[in-house]
Image (tube, rainbow, N blue to C red; front, side):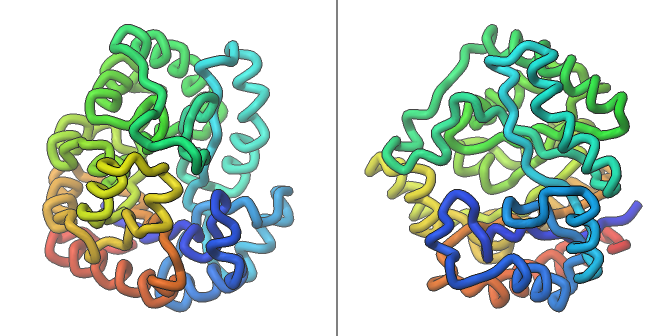
Length: 299
């Protein structure tokens, strides 16, 4: 049982807010991440698109591909259309030994719409999520059969945001097919109980995002009906150890469920207020403290 520590390059290169990180490069992200000690990186949009090019790019910095976002549309696509939409990524990630695709429903998400309050996200009833989960299970089974697990990422502004949403998705989906990307920050921002959700669905967790939250900013965003992107700019998210989440409790829970895999820092915020290398170092150091205290081995 061992843990690998990865990072998303989003602090240096934010694909949804490119102007926010215009003074930074993807090359800087990879070089500085590796200098800190991270051994994996999730795929960013400004990395090479082709498999050979991406492999050479990552090899140059001696860093592995530890997952990457997959914009799903199972809600509106039929099975064949969704498989066609994600098949190239499945094939590429399998070739590069990625642990999973980090899948989220994006057909109707408002996460990228700065003009829409995050409070006004699309929602589904329990029965509608049940139907969605059953449909998505077929797509996830196809991907798993190709050798690439699907780990669903609950996300602010999307149909799977709240604790109930996560519970229903997990309850009604095929546990042999659909896994979970457990994201501490998105769950707390969405009003969920981090520890209760992890305890309930620990056996489904395939991938973990360590993202911390500044609760005063989250409250301001909710109270003043700001968008998800406004929340990012204001600093709702930060690296582990810099907000309010008890990662020591999370670490002990991961130990208790024999979690083995990647813990990925994903902390998009304004680099003018939170310099990416400085804060990524802070997050890395906190993870090492958590792992040591939880008797989790870095491998």
